Image (tube, rainbow, N blue to C red):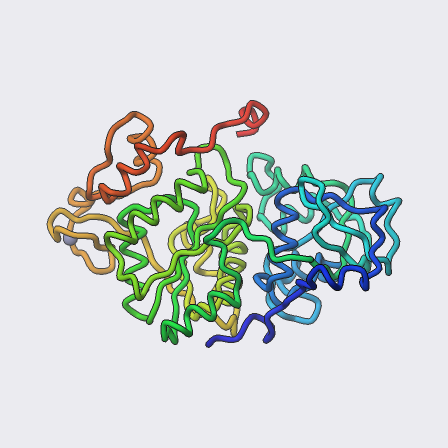
Length: 387
Ligand SMILES: [Zn+2]
């Protein structure tokens, strides 16, 4: 089995019985929003190994400038906890402060090591390659509070997002149990169409097992709702995938839309889950035209020894002459023979009550989405202008 990133799977779940020994200052707890809470759980259960807490200033600066932690380990996205002016006054480095989930329940603690200010414009331009507020990742960063608090964390219980939320040590056991020595991971935020299926199966041809792992959590209006992505994949897998070579689990995390950096991040999380290979298609984790179609593939060529092998794919499409799914690499025919299963096109069809062609989406999947109530995230009033 492949080693976790940094060599050791982080485990910061301490269990209720050790809670007293930790001597946590409860009076000054920090209440987390959903994204921060999910980051806390991902740190504690090893998805973000080797990170053991929210980043200190030096790690933060190294991550945004050089894409590594202070010790040189590759790490592309800052995992940070922002706090307001009021909260900062109550925090003292060296103390353990309670962390509450979005409902106000105490779920863990942070041993505060540092509280620091950051330059949001600089951070945005380094992480996202732009300071444009129409980029949803930039907008999210600008909405953060003024200070970051760094420190190692503890959680009392390994809460799960849903029944598909298998922790890294659990997927590792699953892979071993199934005898998979090599596993290819697939990241998605969409309901599957035929091109996704083609790419996943092309990847599976090269290894023992396939882990389909949608990222669930905050997305932008118009994207599929979490339940619909999962339901659609269940429909696809039960009809078209070999049960003993496929696993469906989730990675609960917001979409950052950070393009190339998020591709590295996605790969490292899957490495921690036990994947040996990871699929990078066109415009991975991109948004609008902020990144070039192959930027996310190029970045892997610049980093050595990531410990997980990227598998690169271009668009796949249905060719009427070949009479099947192909890519430019294997099909010699003209453009007018190509039927591209575009996500946007499929969404439009479904919204107009039309079933997409079988050449774009499996009919089991398309009918499931058509029958789902509100398959897409609705636009909030406050977001209308920004988008
Ligand atoms: Zn062809």
